[in-house]
Image 1 (cartoon, rainbow, N blue to C red):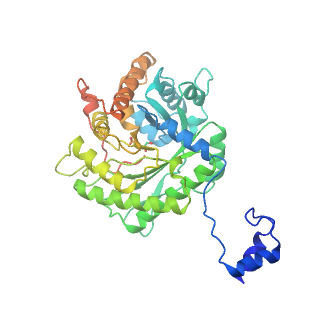
Image 2 (cartoon, helix red, strand yellow):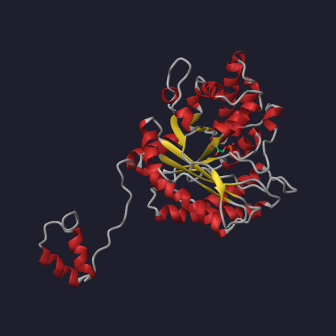
Image 3 (cartoon, rainbow, N blue to C red):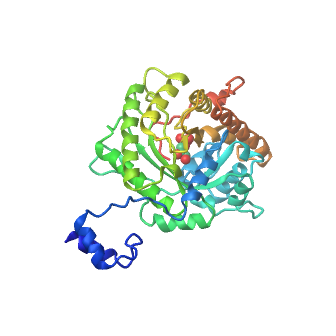
Length: 392
Ligand code: 13P
């Protein structure tokens, strides 16, 4: 019965039924169970997604993350005494995105929606500035974190409603990859509910992004907060990533068309002992090797409050021997700190600030290739940027 209704339902549309007569089909149905057809996400964008992901994950290059919401960009600007106005945000982003030669070290730039639609003061679209440097424009698509009811003071990430139409618009505007950042807190548990919600939200977002031509960056940030040892971070990271991949598969997400943005596996920021770059690399790669299929093209770490130099040293340690994936960076704070300090909002400092960006980008490019040395790094580059309970 179930078999014949299946045949009737599909009779007019299924390419698998072909030219058999209805009676022939019913007969073969009675003889053998219907063949299952594997669900494969082979949308219109499959080839392009793979190409975009490979371009971003290209040797010696990584991502410049400048997708701070207006509120967070305001924090950056106020650190150098500037007001949080659209003009100041535009000026800062113009400084970053028009840095000559940036494309040698940077393969993708994650933008906030406002920036995606902005232009330089001379009227050139920011997305065109990026394309000229062979940098892929990306877009933050999540709508931020809100409290998760029924959890242990944890949060969940909003933004799935209307995401398909927003993503289609971003694609038209030139974006080719997307970012969705949700967080998991170790001191808060994490509860099974918070981990499941984070993983499910990321997977739904990833599927919607791929359907609309955007390579999804999958970012369940495990916050640095806490006094736990590195072993505890490893345990939580393994649990989080196993759930993320479970739901990515359930949502038929094409693994070769995604990028990951994990936190490095470190002790909690308030733990009594610090870990060396070699130890962080060992734990982080152990976690990734246990959880991430080699089909994934790139692992683009966040910096999470580490100092510029620490983030670069840790990345360098992870690239001392070959990995199944491109292991690189997608830093915000660890690429922008010296730039802001050098700029101070003054036009006469723009060139020096762009040089500061190039020098951080180059250091991380070398770290991606496993060839970085910290000799000669400034004191500023060594200063940590961890803020307890930091919100983006
Ligand atoms: P940080 O490198 O400052 O942790 O930024 C992470 C991020 O998600 C920005 O896109």
